[in-house]
Image (cartoon, rainbow, N blue to C red; front, side):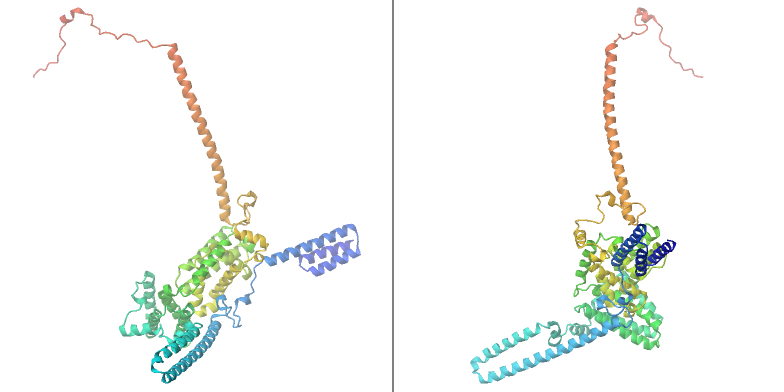
Length: 556
């Protein structure tokens, strides 16, 4: 019996160590050796405990949001961070893929242009030869019919690739304004428009910084101003083409600076940071959420999606954050403030700084809650929770703006690139959030999304968070305020009833006083006596009295 007890204890220890297979073998062996009732009951309870714990483990694993760190890297295997906007590639690989696709498109466009040109020449030759054989009176009608058929065929061909064919058969919209500006010397709209205070400040800081570079500084300033002027004439380009122009300028400027500084990457990065700040501050209004893109529609769709998910709780996302702790609550508020403040920045680097600051506050909340360093598996669910609570304005536009116009080296490596990649993953997860991700049934998920039900019903007192539970402190404060309002309502009712009783008592007291006064007046009636005469009114010898004394004045 002692040996069997030892084996059972050992089985429990192995069970706590998560060795399920070994534990079940030991328990089965014990049940076969000693078929006592007590032993059978003990073994059965152990099996039930194992099954229950396995089910809970599977459920917790299914609820957790885990992203392998390899999924954040470029799909090409270059080691840099990828981006969902670039189909999982880094900026370098995406640029190479984009350029190859662009070259293929250009070759196809050239082939189409040559085909249309040959058809036009053949139509011209056929119309010219037919005009020589036809009588003079039908010459104009035949050429007109041939030309109309050719135009119809040409239009049908051009509708398939109208944007690319226009580059070969119509004067380019890029070169015409440039010629006019060169001939007429008309200033660029980016220069003639009134600059804001921030733009003027950035321009002054940029000039002061370039003074420390002396001769290369003057060249950098000249090229930067020329690039801004050229971008003022490219407002009709798509967002991808604008991004391509900016990235080409970054690459060319970086290569020239590397040659000048003889491979000193630190100096080049410092100069490129200032160039990016100057250029993107000046071009912000024209390249942020351009009219040629659908960024605004994506912003509205994302905001509606986040509003519809307002019912998602910390427990559903398995977020390891306790907002009852004051330091954690402050860090959560700071993280929300940082990611909202991202929209107020103009420079992509400043927007990335807001994302980095938000992420550091998130890591601090996890560290304080768990009393240990935060892991990447804890960071992503918490970031999703922060995004759901903040609902940042123009989130998609800001992500696209950073993706298109940020210095690519900053997005491929470093903590800025890591945090930005996680933010893109969080947004993609929110867009695809379903019942399985939150461990809910499809029926519950649909009821929550439609507003027919809520995880916390306001009319159910048991659903309100109790003191000491890990809930949002704002909800606890609302619950406390509702209790205070309920108590105040009861006290107001009591005061109202007391005032009404006091008014009734005052009326009764007034009536009682009036009755008592009336009774006293009836008991003791008022008697009016005649008026008393003067003291010497009856003295008949009044005229014999001496006159009254008068004051006398003596001189002297």
